[in-house]
Image (cartoon, rainbow, N blue to C red; front, side, top):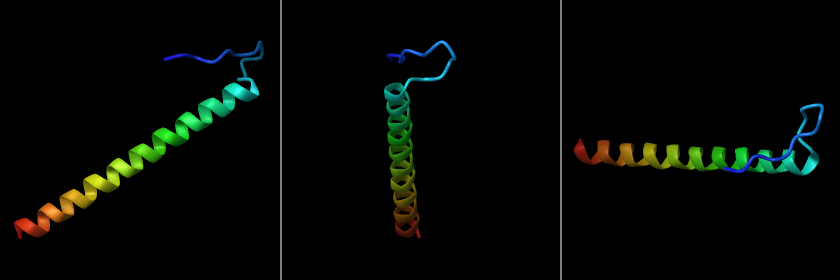
Length: 50
């Protein structure tokens, strides 16, 4: 995992901040999709078991 270069003040430069934001957004999207799939699978399993 590569870390972006930080400026002297400790703030990420614009490019780095955008990169971090997009990475966080993608991990959030993937996590929410995974949770939705898991929930749907559990629901289907519960209905079939019933």
